[in-house]
Length: 246
Image 1 (spheres, rainbow, N blue to C red):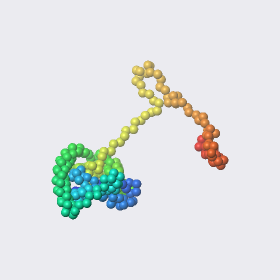
Image 2: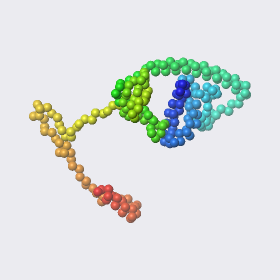
Image 3: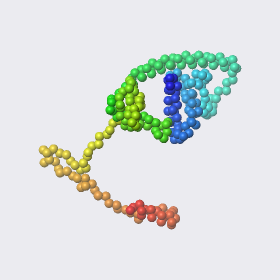
Image 4: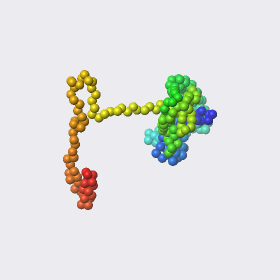
């Protein structure tokens, strides 16, 4: 819990598992290995390089990359000595580390600016809020639940919430306002007019007078069955139509 990078990665991995194991959540463990491979071969926004490339100094070829090389004929068949390979790998390491440090400095400045621009949502005691909680069927699925009452502010970004008779503390990112819709009392066919305008206005028309009365003009005998049906099938269709038109 004290390592923010590890907790951040755990959150990313959980989010990836939620998306890939959505249709079959009971087999979520089967997705861990391919998801870790996909995470390690993807360039990160902070460093500009994939974790695999920073460790082994070259890009890993996934299934799609190999298939692309086979289709385009770009497979590299170069043969080099061990000494040349070590020298080239050391040069790639040095270049990758320098570029990664530059990207990290730029990313820190960009993230600092983004963090300061995030609006700080505040709640007051007695407000109704929704909480982003895991579903009962699967821990990997999240949904907004509520409404729950805010008991008070605990810290700069934490609030105490009354949840099932107990006081729970949640971060403001896990909360959002709960608003109720106002239901208007509408009387069907009523027309509101001022007393001074009643003489110039026509009398109100009720919905029963303006709405035409619809009557059924067809029945089951008007349904045309296919000529390719057998006799027993035609009888079944006629019996079904008689029941449906009642």
